[in-house]
Amino acid sequence: MAAVPAANAQGSGAAQKYKNCTELRKDYKGGVARSATVKNKGGKTKYKPFVSQALYDRNSGLDRDKDGIACEK
Image 1 (cartoon, one colour):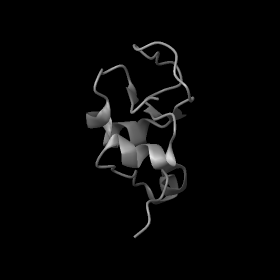
Image 2: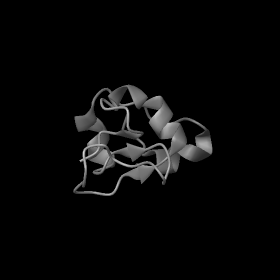
Image 3: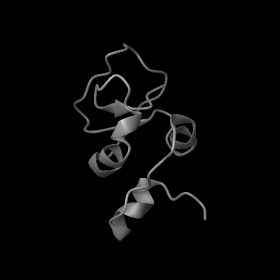
Image 4: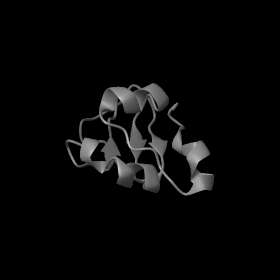
């Protein structure tokens, strides 16, 4: 079964759960942000994160620094 990015999964009401940041970044290079207003604790990032509350909530365990952006790069 292929991974369905959350942008497509929103209609089904289910956000994709990723097992690690490597898998998440295959679909979202910049990671996933809880909201458009969160700021990265680590400073400037290379890619802009995808904003999705549902996707972030499903993968919040991957947000090691707890800044509201999971797997930022």
